[in-house]
Image (cartoon, rainbow, N blue to C red; front, side, top):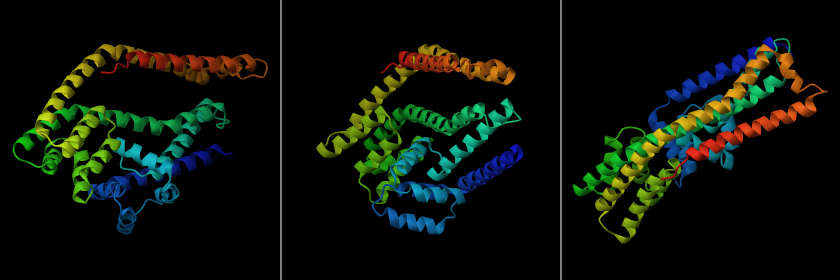
Length: 326
């Protein structure tokens, strides 16, 4: 296969993805909120039809979204993207994975062997490229969850002050959506809009917990639901929870400082053999091909598998040591 043809096809797909990204980014925030709220409303099909008639869909995303609509895979991808606050559709996310698979695979294969880009290195690079979008999504989820957890205690103080001033629960939540910074203001704005569209508070808060899987948030929502059923002073309850969360955040920060060296050491030690192997493959392919030669592959391939298992197990062991529950 002509390498220039592969490069042209890959470049065309990258351009298409860029156009899709610009189109998605250009959509207004209101349309995005309505799209995500539509998953939780009873009249989902009616809202989806209205939204579809008023929006221009992306060419690749619409076709794949039609296949994923109503499936468990599509729902799981939508939930993961919502947790990361990425404004793309499941179909566009899968298209990104395919393009990353082709682009990274071809790039690694071309660098390793320009005469035959479709080789073992291209397959390995393609597998790595396939997981790059997922790694980015997980990283965005972690960063967003950390920011949300850091803002939760301040949000509770704002709610406590509002409740003591005579606000209702809805008014207190609305003040959080207006006064607090992102991402906590964005999430509670969705909660308020869901309640204004007719959802019960309990269901709207459950939707929030699905988007933000936080133990501290689960404690707050449980306290609010129990107070609505049995009564009590919600301001005093939230004030106590706010103090508890502040102490937990402080202790987690101290633990993070003490265990950061272990985490960075584990990541560096896990990546170093992979980086060295890739460098050796580029610099001296003949040496690395000894692992796959017919005469030596009965020993070389098991050694590579054993090395990969040891690296992965060592990385997760160091992560487990540094993971201290508070």
